[in-house]
Image (cartoon, rainbow, N blue to C red; front, side):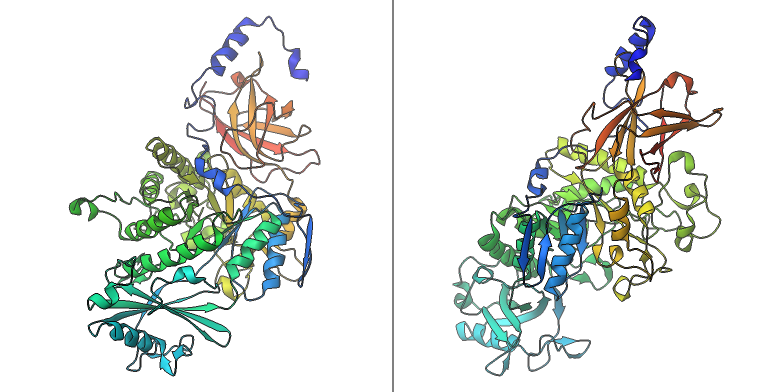
Length: 618
């Protein structure tokens, strides 16, 4: 408490302190940049993690400890589906041990497919072996569906066939008309045959099947005998975690694969409605069902979505966002308490014609919010090299060596990119707050990519050309985004966190060993009583930590001990686990408009991977 030794009679300093304490929240003076911090959201209550059911549990896969042993700043992870259910348990345990409370499932897509003259589903001109076993009394399922439709009215016909695969199993809630919709079991595969009116109406009754001849779409689902989602939700209950299953992935536009096809949107809407109705019957009230993941990936850029009834206005809407809104409306109707999570990517490279500036991305955020999403978790896009991790005073510095394969040689950060990760999240945080003022309840999360652009250190065939990264780089990403978001998640646990070269630790093992290293995310000027100082916000900030403060032209770096932790709570809506530390520091010694570096060192000598860069307007 040695900062209390300041003389109480220094009236001028006291007056300055009083002025500083009443500055408005959006004044540029207190902070490194005049931008919004993470804000609270009503949706956050629906994504709060449940409590583990017990300290341990035992099943045929073994005995599993449900304790958190090495909590880290990243608390949610994507998982690739697996057929080994014991692997699920090991993954949940490993994720939970490092503080993970959220699992996001990668899902499957709805596809339009041709059929041959016998009604067998084709893929690339050949009979698709996945759907070939689906027969009813020796008749292919698509033909059998058309026969049943024609028996009700000879004018009925099948105009389009769609297929969908999943490792889930559904209950009777997925069916609307049992006269023509069926569950067909063939060995270890279960097929569900659904009928959708071509206009997407999905009538509440089945009377129209016989009253008039119409065109119908057949949706053939190849599913499983045992429901994977039930098992994942059970694991969520046992470990105290939230599960976000994926919505059906929209078909892609054949003319532009990055865009969702609007031709199949009615059928996609019907399938989404049926699955959600079944979920509502079986999972309503499950604490471990966190929400739903929208898996169709799109780029964050200047997009428009109004949802207007006026055809001229609606024509301006982004086609993929129209598809989003159609699906999201079903979730709102059937399970309105469950938020939809979407994770678009950023593209900041100036060399790309389709790149977007931070302000253009903010406009895209606002358009996304209007489609009914509850959580936007933009990919930080550092793993793909589409955005760089740097501070405003580092724009003239050369790009990270690991980014050169995707931006080229000899470029500075400012030459390569429209902005840094922090620039983009700052603008999106502002967009989030503007949408909240308009009544849109949407959270901003960060999806920090746990890989590198080059496969120099490959993680296996499933990860393609991407290579593994290290905890140091992941810490730096958290520092860049942490001020503006309410949660940090990462793509993806399997395999980027678990792969390792012989004799080297995996990323998950690095985190377990180094989870308590300081990770600062923000610094603001904050006097206490009559003493000027700095409030540091971040993770693992202890009372024994030190801050080393430097700036250009300074004769000697200044190292100051932390004078108190938790004196003020972190701003509302910031991620769980974040705290505050206060350091006495006279800002009057810093020249006007100068960037200051603040490096945090823990009590054991470990330094934060990334120092904060702060510029205070005096």
